[in-house]
Amino acid sequence: MLEELNSNSGVNKRMVETTFLALEYMLPVIALSHRVFYFWLLPIVICCLLAPSLSYSDDLRLQSLSLRARISEQTLLGEEAPEDFEEYDLSANFELSWKRYSTSGWGMDTRLMASAGILRGAGRNAFAVSLIPELTLGSEDGRFILDVGAGGALFSRYRFGTQDYGGPFQFALTSGISIPLYKKLGLGYRFLHYSDAGVNGSDTTGADFHMIEFSYRF
Image (cartoon, rainbow, N blue to C red; front, side):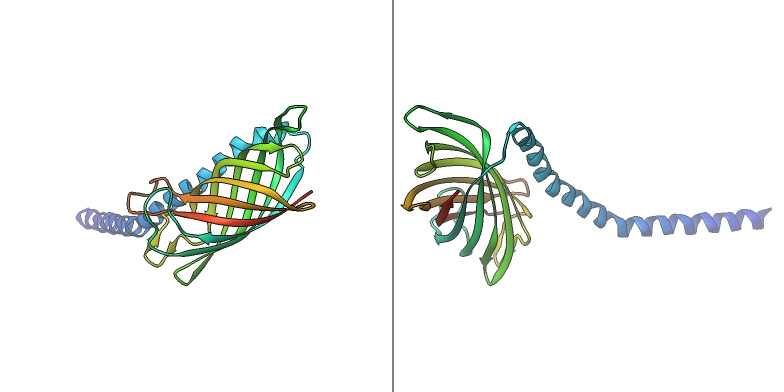
């Protein structure tokens, strides 16, 4: 009987040791999964909020395409970015359902701006995509447009040298103006701000982008 108890005690001890060893290796993975879950939860929530607007739209019509490039690094929102960045991307603007125009052809509209491009800083490249609902003010033909919007972006890399954006998901704020250049071609200025809004701690830094854009209206 004593030998059996000692044997069972040894087995239980080994089981406890194995369990603690497994937990020791699993905890970092669980913590990482927890952070990744929240990084991906935010863009999913944004897409869910956008879904009603898309479903009520009779036709998600493509309004314009734009090529954009950063031309200035002057900081307007938040702290000064410790690294210099370049960004080159392609954006597409889609018409949403809500609009109000007067008989004069001027008024307000809503649209969805989607972009994809390259973000470069400290010798590193990242793929960046964004989805931003916007409110526009201007002419119904889209020749003169003033817009403002807020949405989200995803970076394939979020650490560039000494600058840490905090995570792959970033909140995105934008404002822009566009004027006619030649026929359906337009010239515009865009301000774009990326930040995690302190979600990942107080030691993260966003960045401001002053961009020139060339657009084609459909």
